[in-house]
Structure formats: C-alpha cells, structure tokens
Length: 133
View 1 (cartoon, rainbow, N blue to C red):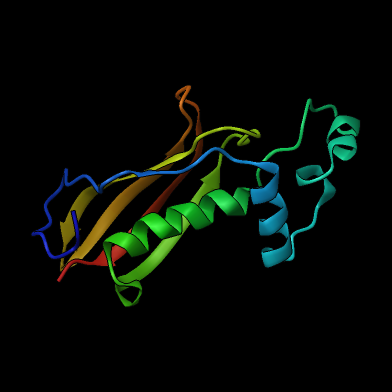
View 2 (tube, rainbow, N blue to C red):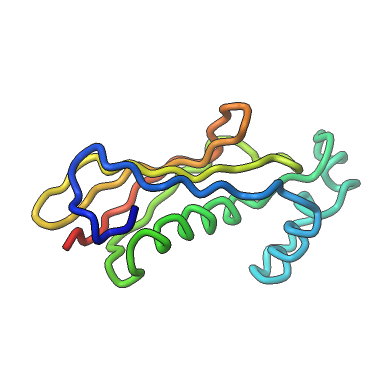
C-alpha cells in the first residue's frame, strides 16, 4: 500500500520485514551513525555489562521504522515521527516494522508504529503524523 490509496482509520501499512541483525550490520551502523558504544559491537563490553552478547542500537530500529514510513509516504509529507524504546533487539533477531493509521483529521494521518521480533517482543513503539493528501 502506498499513500496514493485513500486513507481511513484502520489502514495498515505493508509491514517491513528485515533480515536478521548481524555483527556486520551493527559494525556498519556504528560507523555510519558515529555511535560506537562498545556494548553494541564488542562482546567483552556486553558481557562486562551483564549481557550474553551485543545487541542492536535503538537508533537502528528507529531508522528501520523511518524506512517503513518513507517507503509509504514521501519524506516531505512526514510532519512528526516519535518513538519510545521498550526492549533491546538481540543479535540474530528478525525485526518487523508495522504501522496502522489511527485517525485521519484535517488532512493529517495519525499513525501508530512498532517494531516487533519474531517471538512477539515489541522493541520500539512510536507515532507519526503524515499529510494524507
């Protein structure tokens, strides 16, 4: 579904299914984003923090969710995009980004967003406001 389809409350964006999170993905994102926090790329740092392994940057999940939005609506129509990080995304997890139009009012679509893992864990929730026409 693209934004060219008339919007009504309940409209579901086509989910964005992503490949498993790999160490390569984390290293590339660290370099591109400038977020080189070792807990995301260094196994020893993660273990020192009491974790079994490294995990994805929260902003990587936000970037994926932004990709869902811009794949659905042109960037210039996005008026706001807010997220809340609610759980970590472990190595090898397969995130899926989802969105549902909650309401359309005065030409603006309010969209509820989330990122979920295959086991049902929600790692990120959010909202966006997008010009509907």
